[in-house]
Length: 268
Image (cartoon, rainbow, N blue to C red; front, side, top):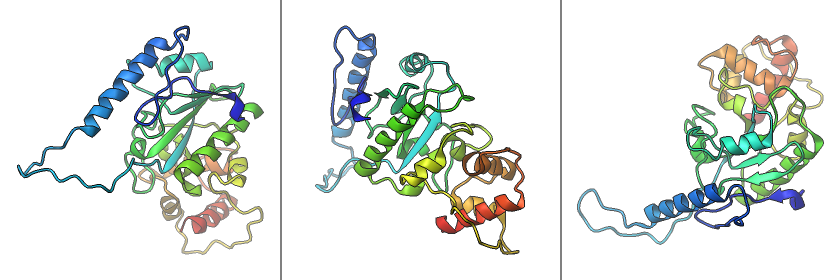
């Protein structure tokens, strides 16, 4: 719920929030503020025209806006462990939001800044996912169910992000979706159907009556949805993890092909 949202390190181009001196994250908050100022200097500096001509500044521009929301599980044992991971430079990983098992929300990076959460990833024609997405990490060791409080807070955050940035419904996806074979988060217990019912991601129809055409190529279906099909088996596994949530085999049975075909038509 909104009242649970705890802003730890929200700062940057638009808003800078300084933590009180008693916060254990005061040192990293100062680093955040310094780095945000450096970025501000970089984008306000008058560009140099490579041709040597005078720079002519347009008056029509704005901030780049996120177009995807990528959901992860932390694969760590506590929220505090994850906060530490994201506040030391040696790890080179981060996210915009971390949501604890208790539903507490930690906003760690301004939505308009680029977090390092997706790594080597691809979705459709997008190959630099970090530059166009918001990353949300859920405190979960990778094997446990997600708590009701955690999902409730997640839905609140997603609702805010969708309204604020106009993220398309189909663009709420998981880390495993954009990195098949490399990542398996969020785990198989994640309630994708519940999210889709709230407008965050697509889901198959409750009653699928479609007959899969003999000409339908499942690999093409996965590609149309957005999956990287360079390794078809890994793409199938990622699809099963998100939309089937049972046995992850890398091979589609007939019922799963119907689900894929049903979804494929939604993404056309």
